[in-house]
Image: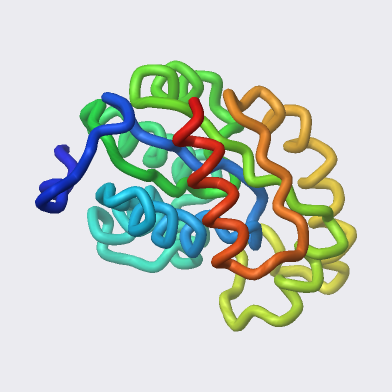
Length: 182
């Protein structure tokens, strides 16, 4: 699968993608779209690609296939992508499969969008979007278990980018500056 055509007047920063990793609620898709615009690069989202290919929302995919099969589909999506300049947002659990780290290395540079768990919980409480792994009464406790398991895995990313509570514009400006310097 190829990326959309680059905008006219685009200056290549690298030959691969900037791959955004992080917990659910970190803003990978939102920051990714804005970063792609700032860098004049195409944007892709593994969850959107997966929903398009399988014709169902993520929550339905989880309930129909289970997490294990869902994760296999995520790996297949990564394997279908070509190494090209762009910004790629990923699902929060995509880091769990070791094979995906091989694909990340093939596709580009990984960036961990690191946000404090308290801020993530606050965002998830305000979100209308239901997260399949958090459909439980004590979801905050489940979230913290997931966070503690995944945090060391996210730290494997090529770039660690703490997202302090700033505006989207400030965060994207700082991240764009950081990737331009790479």
